[in-house]
Length: 225
Image 1 (cartoon, rainbow, N blue to C red):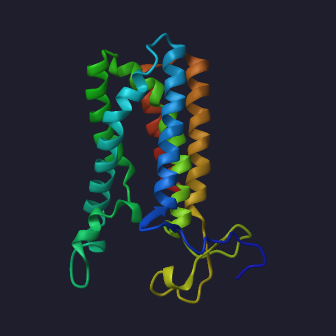
Image 2 (image 1 turned 180 degrees about the vertical axis):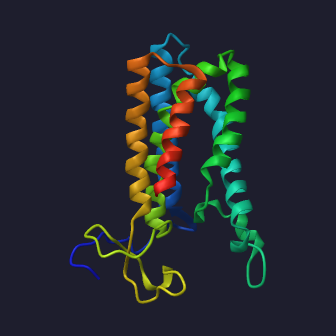
Image 3 (image 1 turned 135 degrees about the horizontal axis):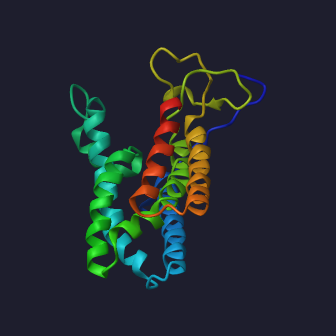
């Protein structure tokens, strides 16, 4: 253990009677609310009808959650299938595990459906969502902190993340602190928000091109993280 390090929560679930309240789910919800708020402001500022983004979100968010979970299960099947595993846990979204590219893929389909229903140009919807999605990701990543997941290699740096013994990977039982990759990605996503807004203002880019700036910026961060 280093002299300075980031502690992990002792628990991420609270019970209100028989109902569990999970910090991971609260972080995801907070991210979605922030994204809808920002996108709505940007849409109205462009002359769009108030409330359209909320209507589109009713399609995009469920599609995105399903897509994110499918991507996670498909890319990490060993967590749910095979000897000693419980396939039913593939449905336990509140325990963590949402793949962003699956969420983007099906979420985009849901947004397209929603945009058609409210009569909004899909390209302009993509533009207003370009900084809103990384904002949601920045907030949602803190759910991984509560779950003690998505940390990196061992480190003795002052900002190393403390991981409980029962959450450490095999072979690392005697290592106490790891790179807080959830934090790296959260901060990077905030930087992507700023990048998208700056490029939009500086070069007057909009539509799918602006959304591509988000995709490229986020992907660059995932590459080094």
